Length: 394
View 1 (cartoon, rainbow, N blue to C red):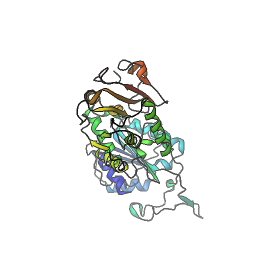
View 2: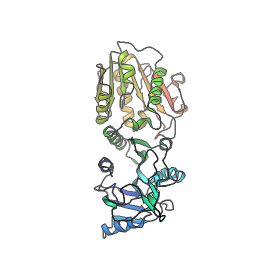
View 3: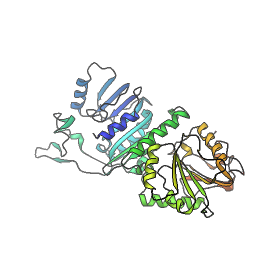
View 4: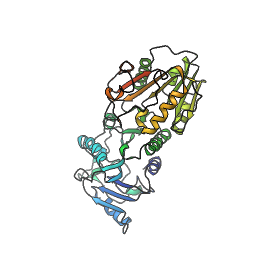
């Protein structure tokens, strides 16, 4: 198992947490990861036998021989559920169903690693026995544990399936996909939620391809075109060369390339230092672009200095008091004739879903519009009706 993946698991799993490992193998994925309790299940008995021998006498480690499709675990019975290189060995429909099952079993999060594309990894030997073409049964941690017929690949899960079930793509290199799901309701709100968001995005920023974490199943060209169209629809007036444009929760700074050439200055603000490092690399060609790492609550800019502020797909990730603090900060930094543009999800796949009725108490009907099935958009003059109230379900 790749070192970067073990490092990722170690950064996400707390020593005080319980972990369920589906298709655990010989635990090559979580070698060196500290946790309070570990339960592993695998259908191939030689792996289970090896683990029981290795952890003999350790009551915090339990290993079950069984078919994971036939075992039901307690609701939120584990803090973290892991499925490393296992779903591709199932038929497609059961593999997709497992994405939902794991969310039931996890109290805090699910971590999935699976191939991005399908490849036939086995051939049949003359005696009819299954022979894995890779070196998995000839060297490394699996050496000497026999030919495992269950290693045959049967499917590849489309990225769209992860997206519709609320998973996020953390890393998506050429041959593998790392996806995670968070149970935000189980996190201390708002501080725990904010810290967890930060930890997630820090890992995204350090990944091989952070762009994959936010575009889901969209192709890059289509995603960027869609982002550009969103911005064009949000601004029914031309950007001015004298404008200071602030992108709150900027991430990788996708819109910088569209905005920076048209304004005096573009300022991207984010809570993740590693994401901002990537954003600076991507947008280095724009001398008037600045990226600022903030504390997750304040906007480090002078009062009444901002002409336009946009926050795209950000506020749904905040706790109550964090959102309130940001709205007060937005009202402080905006010029009297400044414009504030907010985008919120309206799909249940997200942590928070909004309907128009929930937004109307805070925004007038003519300020709210939708350009597609995914999002509500809000445009308002902040000083006209000060945005100091949290927008969200009561």
